[in-house]
Image 1 (cartoon, one colour):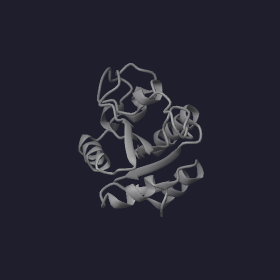
Image 2: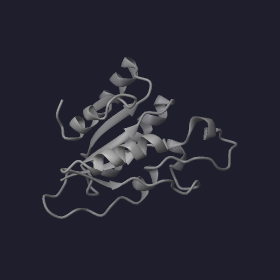
Image 3: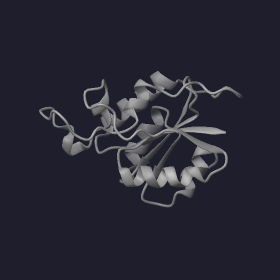
Image 4: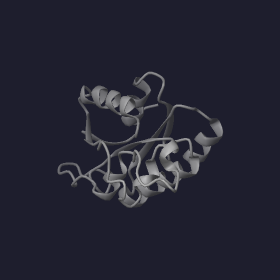
Length: 157
């Protein structure tokens, strides 16, 4: 079983992924929280760019940061490579590439050897290269079909 953590703050994309992945036999979504506390450390790291104004006191914090704070318990069985029972993290690439790179580093710090797949609505070869340099395995277009995401989660090109 491939254990997947979703880090995506767009409800339609998250719900679509959850729905599709729920029907994939060898994939289990271990956590896809709706919203961490706004004042949680790192909660702003996945915030909506409009709400990312430093003067804002609240706004839509992206899911996934709560998962970084409170990861799922380690799974039994084969012992997945991630420190918290996560094999793959699917992370959203935000408008702010630097923030996305920070999120990738947080994932690495928290989950170690976990595989990271990035999804973007604005494919950019320079950003994709930079993400790959920091260890992202695949950068996929989230406006396209979901089959490439499933293949990437399974570790297939």
